Length: 309
Image (cartoon, rainbow, N blue to C red; front, side, top):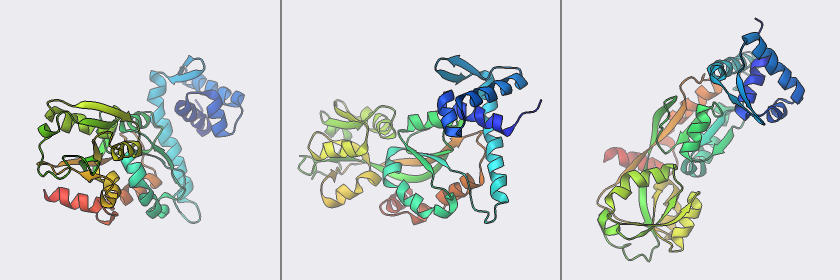
């Protein structure tokens, strides 16, 4: 048996895209060359690696068994190239995911400060926590920064930073000047919420909804900016990260209700438990872990205050 790195690279690329044509474009090869390479790999292993469901190719059990080993070998090869490069700087593009709060309000600052650790700019995917976990489980991302919970057995989640969730409203809301509100006092309010399976929606369903005798579902939107704009227009109240809403609170465009309890939440770093940690990934993880005391406002305040509660 004589497997080649090129065959494994073709296999891993097809596994990520699920399509011969897309894999060929990524590898700058002809579709025929990609197909031939896959056929030779399957011949040498004496087993199909994909189920052919035209026009897609889906990993079968044997393919899923090979995928983490192939990804690790390819990443290790990249590390060898890095090790013997003249400047020994990180090489290879990190495939980074972030949920919306982190992606829109924290990640740009992190990326601006981590150019040395990353080498090449990362390929960034910003979507909800559920979708990020799906991408990680299929080795389509190297690392994700999430605000929701990990429910996938193949993924490792590491607590990272502390955030806080706030109930926010238009400044003219009748309850805006009341202090130490209870959740029961918010019965019959109309709520503007993120979509199901997002981290923010999950927090609402776990921490707020059980304490409401009654509540009304208003708009359901898939971006935080849309949610906050809807609340600014008086279309309802919402449950939003302080990290996302702090600028609007400071500008007086929104107000946070004074409640009898606080709603801290954990931001996490998450990756596949079988994922090989390349030099670039290790450096970026180390950089992220060192940021707790050096983050821009308001997250540094959130971290300190939440820990002191």
